[in-house]
Image 1 (cartoon, rainbow, N blue to C red):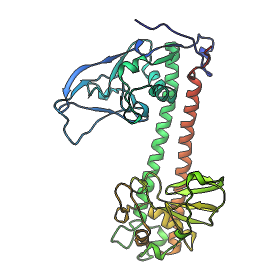
Image 2 (image 1 turned 90 degrees about the vertical axis):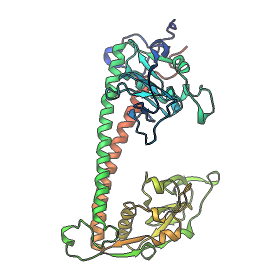
Image 3 (image 1 turned 180 degrees about the vertical axis):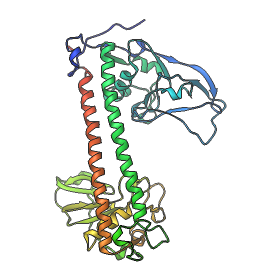
Image 4 (image 1 turned 120 degrees about the horizontal axis):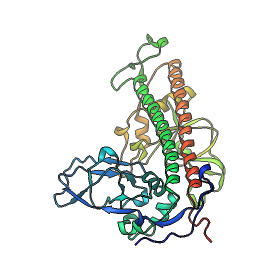
Length: 402
């Protein structure tokens, strides 16, 4: 039996053709979704799918190890809604794409047929909102680390809906914005890939004395030399002062850690152009962020980043881009907590050439960095725009309620 509609809601922003329409009504997801359990193969033979976190979609699961013959999998159909019981709070939602029709998942990735009255694309955007998955997901059983949203619980969750035509309009609008975001993201990724490839050609490979690519004016400039990093820079680690988070006085001075600014404090310990290099943390291996980054002016640095002073700003930039272009596995110690200690940092061999060629390389890569930064800002602006738009296109929890 379907649950009766409740109080009508009105979002802050509506498309012109719907401004005079009736308010949204609240129903149960179970009024429109029904769990699908079409038996498929066992775990050793199933063509498996997985749902990526943070709304990244549904993909084929490639496993190096064969699955269990005792695990039952279920066939999924294109257009069905799927989510992860365990990662509900991590926005693991998706719609099965056409190319994964008849692929399979186990019961921890339940699937649902969607009936008339609920647009699949609208549903996906609706559940990806933090107002939905975080607020309702907190009601699930189990500890936060092992909290599962079972299908019966999921189907009991409320959903606020406008007419099917307004759902379609909202879905089309957000889908178009998603396409812009995806295109911009691909552009940023392409620029980063281009930069990485360029850096590998602008510096000599291990065991070689000349790079594969040189600017025309340096084609006959001869071989590069190699020296340990400690011969190129003065280490200022002894001047670092860590401050526990509870003892920091809020201010306007950047407080740097292993991967950049972590806070703003009162007072400073450095007031010049310097280069920081991550001393510890998973980023030394993952390289999600640059491990070498410049600081300038009044700053404070804790004991998670090495601090280096160079005689030439050009050499500093040259070393920065080089350190960010190479693997440092041979210099990193520790497994659970990777660490690049001072002794290992000092030993890193740095190939170098004349100041003029260093400047040319640094200038080229700096220009590329500026372009990447500009395009990344455009990407973030699009994401922010979508987030703000969704906050207005969907009624907030409790909005318009008596």
